[in-house]
Length: 282
Image (cartoon, rainbow, N blue to C red; front, side):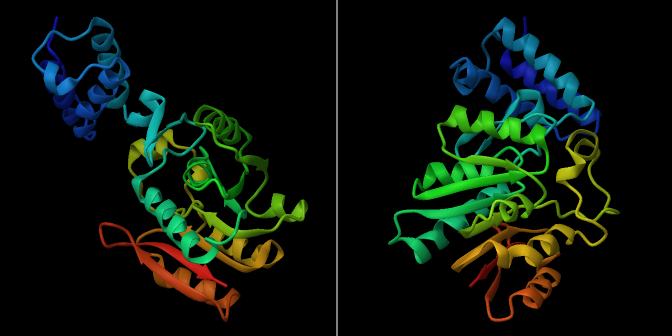
């Protein structure tokens, strides 16, 4: 039998040799131990639990081939909640947690005095944004959409597992909201924004759903779709919040200005100082 420490070292070495991120080796072990209530840092030099050893080595093998850690585990932690993920949904990223935080702070500025605020989470994927907003601020009545039926199955499971009250509708961007004549106070969207030609890490391209990644030649296709139809769903006093690529701030601001001439349009930086979010305040 191996110790936890020696297993982690083996995992790091194997992932390094395979050209994958070696830090995933330790994170993976931390999660497997957390599932069994084992404090890894106290038990580092003890003999590893047999089941954990088996699961760990199988998982390292999958990650050597490029499978992301979230898919190996079957979940990803987002804003303190464990979201089920599989290959039908994008693995939620830390940058998107910042988008959620931004929406929550803007909510306090805008709508603190209201009992209920209608929120649309467009292109929801795993449901991470809409579900987290609803759990963190129960005044938010959230409806989330996605074009992928498979993604909505995952989102619905997360909604039930985490005890949220989000409603889900299927369709492309704003179409399902327009079709039902629904209106919102807050529209939040993390659309596919990678330009079609951009080179991506192999693990992302091979495993994560392309429908959730690529946003046309310039990466802005889905923002255009939303901007064009936003007037059909927005209430008079409303704001929109988007995640974007770190190099899209100027292009997206200019595009937004074409559709929202008198709005306040702001680019927000993420914790690493990169342009990452855009808000449009009406």
